[in-house]
Length: 229
Length: 229
Image (cartoon, rainbow over all chains, first blue to last red; front, top):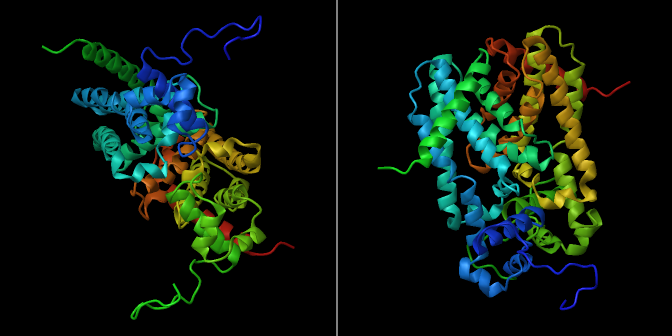
C-alpha cells in the first residue's frame, strides 16, 4: 500500500496506544489474546497488529509465553504493594477492619476494570498450568493471601465464616466475568467492594466503611508515590 | 499396538465413562477442551480419546462447536427447572426469601462442582461471542435472571443493594475458579450459598436459612421427579 487513494489519509502515527514499543506489543497481544484466543494468536499476528516486523517483537519478548506472562503479571503485581500497605494499617475495631478489606477490594477491582482489554479472561487458560507460569500464579496467590488476612481480621470481630477473605478474592475476580458479559459499570468495583464487606458479615451501614476505605487508599497512593529514604 | 507385552492387560471396556457413544464423546471433549484448550483440540483428537473413528463422532455432532455447545448447555439447562421451582416457593418473610436464594445457589454450585471436568472454565472463551452460542448465552442469562429475582426478594426485606442477585450469580460461578485453583472442597457450594445470602444483607444466623434452603431443594427434587399429569 504505497499509494493510498485520494481522501484516504496516510497512516502516520503508531497503530497502537503505548509510549514504547514494548507497551504497543502488549496492547496488541492483549487484544488478540482476549478476542481471538491465545492459541490462535501468533507472534507474527501480534507484530502485524503493531505495525512492526516479527524480528522487532523478538527484541522485546523471546516467546509468545513471555508476552502472556507480562500481561498476566501486570494484572496482579502493581496491586501487591497497595495490598501490603492496606494490611499495615491497624485494624482496630470491626469498622476499621472492614474498611481495609473494602480498600483492598476497591483498588484491585478498579485495576481489573481499568485495563483496555479484559486480561483476567486469560486466568483460566489451560496453558497457565505450565511451570512457565508459576511466577504469575505465585504473585496471584500472594494477593489472595492478602484477602485471606484482611478477611480474617474482619471475621475475628464479626464472627463471620473463615473463608470470607477467599470469597472476597473470588468476588473481585468475578469483575472479569461481569466485563466479559458487558455488564461492568463505573460503579461495579465499589459495589463488589461493598459485597466483600458483607461476605465478612459486616452487618452495619457500609457508608462509613466505604468512606474510610477510600480515604485509606488515597493516603496509601500518596505515600507510595513518595520515594523511600 | 497389536501385541501388548506380557503383564499389560488388553484394553477391553470402553475408554471413557458414559452409557452412550454421545456421552463418551462429551467426556473426552470436556477433558481435552479444559486441559489442552478448545482451539488446540480437533474432532479427530476427541474421536481418538474415545477410541472411535472420526466418522462415528460426526454421527453424533456435526462440528466441534456443536460439541462445545452441548457441554456448555449441560452446565446451565438442567438447573433452570430447579431455579424456576425455587422462585415459585412463596418468599413470605426475609428468612424464606433468603432460603430461596440459598437453595438456588446451593443447587447451582453443586452442579458446577459435580461435573468430572471444570466446564465453567470454558465460559470466557472468545469463541463464545459467535452467534452460534447465543442459545447457550440466553440460557445462562435466564439463570442469571433467576438470581436477580431471588436476590431482589431478599433485599426488599433486608434493605440490601439492588445488585445483590447478580453478585450472588457471580459468586456461584466463581466456584469454577476455585476448582481451577484446586481449592474446591465438598463444603464449597454451601459456603458460597451462605455468602450469597450475606451479599443480600441477611445479617441473622445462617443456620435456619441453610436448613430451610436444603429442605426446599429436597422437596423440589422430589416434585421434579414425578411426571406431570
